[in-house]
Image (tube, rainbow, N blue to C red; front, side):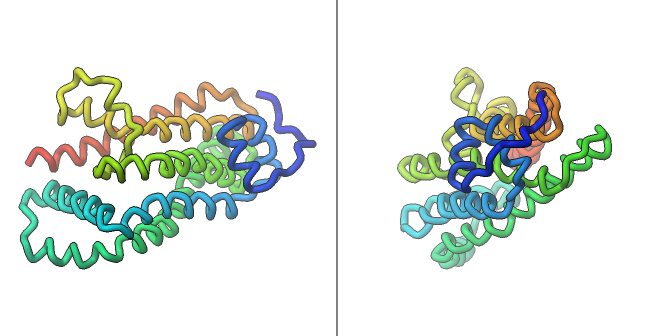
Length: 243
């Protein structure tokens, strides 16, 4: 992997966002030289927050969110939601759009900080790299553009389908229709999002540019972690579903 270009000109926020999608390698040359994680993180939070929250300002969207909450509660508790609980949830559903947007604005920055801290420790302390935490954070936040794109494209599809899932409509469940629904392999594939895989690869490209390493080993490592985490989450939820 060649070193980041020392003469790569800075780019606007919009150019960075588009560049991460269309030409991540050259775009990350600029990002690691001019790390500006705050502005792209705000943009990503707004896109994901609006994609998640706007549908819940409609009756159809509120019902979708309500159905999802009922399924989750019944899966975790093993008990049916009572009419009193359902009525209370209906009342809170009116504010679901606001809480969804606010939740993204709070949770996503924390997640990005935690991921960046782990990657910085691994690449700097364990692997002897010299990237700054701000550079790693810039790579992580800019890779979130892919997730924001997936959220923006997936929201109207789920709205039209009337079904809301964590993985969204772009999951790998459709590639193995022979698997019996509800089984662990089918659930794991259903939890793996195409945009999540793409985002992971883009993050690997950014880290490879920053630390002057080959992209493939980093991408494989990050994908293994991503698939493993999704598998653990699926196993966790499946254990409650089997009650």
